[in-house]
Image (cartoon, rainbow, N blue to C red; front, side, top):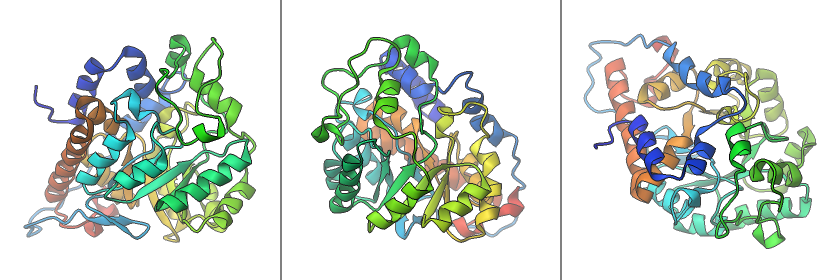
Length: 355
């Protein structure tokens, strides 16, 4: 079957992956209200297209923190890529590079950050969880800079892990040949040896610091030469405080509906954040992106670019690096089509009057 949209990639990945792995990637927290709202909120927004715009070619290129990318789409940080493909994040970063864009690499990568950056042809931003072991946290920050990462994305919406009920039922575990490679040198590469519930939830709640605060953001900004992006903001007042504490960019995110269920859809939260920041720093968005029209709507509401998570994993599961590139290039084609039909020839022309 030809894969002509991201739903086709999802269906193909479902067929290829073990059910426990697919359910880990696919599901959200509790009743999955936010997971569903991330999608449905886009469908409620209508595009007021312009006509007779005299278009020929479209320019989809843009940048994130000064790093040029071929389109306003990058790979969001997602964990455990070796569950989808034997080469894991190495295949992902190659596919992202083929598509000419950026990758956000999870702390919970199954390939060490140095290997991923070495294989990259575009910018790699390192997503950071703050461990209770602050020595390890400091080491991860230093390694990210030494490896050549383009920035650090601090996740702030997961002081503890949300209730992901399928993972609890499945007693989600990593196979013996898969580890949290970035933390393995410090002895934190494996899940706790317990039998009840989700091993990932136990790992996060055991290892990560639930007491992180604004002082930790300030520490991180001062501890690294890399720009710091704060990921997991849905409020304007929090966004302003991020700027005040040195953040270089914000990702409006609810963790893909996997943390606090019934939190707002990210596209609905975006306008408040954009208005509060008033252009002081860059704003990105993730959550529910499945169509090129979703991306145009996010740009029109003030995002500089979007991050996609699950679709990257579907592409990886279907065909490794080539599958990742294919999924991203499909989105590129949809964005190009949507811009043409909206009467826009460049990203700068995608503005709020389209909504």
